[in-house]
Length: 138
Image 1: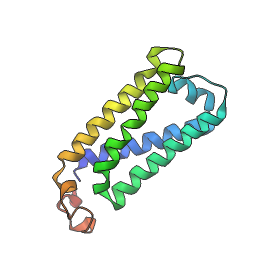
Image 2: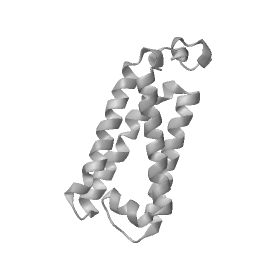
Image 3: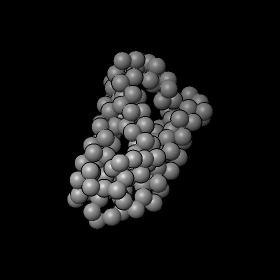
């Protein structure tokens, strides 16, 4: 996996874990940032747990099953698209969709980068140790 793609994926993973932790620590702030301000901490905690799990899955795929990213990333685009719909239905302002639009575009772009990465499309991508891959020294 090329370094720019790996860096983008690490940022996605860290961002998701960070959003999840924010939801657990400051649910009011997190719900406002989501675009649907609420004092109901239960749904905020559920969304935060979802984000932490998605971030953890991103790191697991990077480390152990990089070819799985070819399916996981396009599927993950559904999350911000669904969030856009949620904000449009229950949010207080259409501007609340902005972070979700950014997330959908970013994940879509990273998905394209992953599909263009020949190392990920190679049948050997998951079978050979990382040290044997040509990009391991990058």
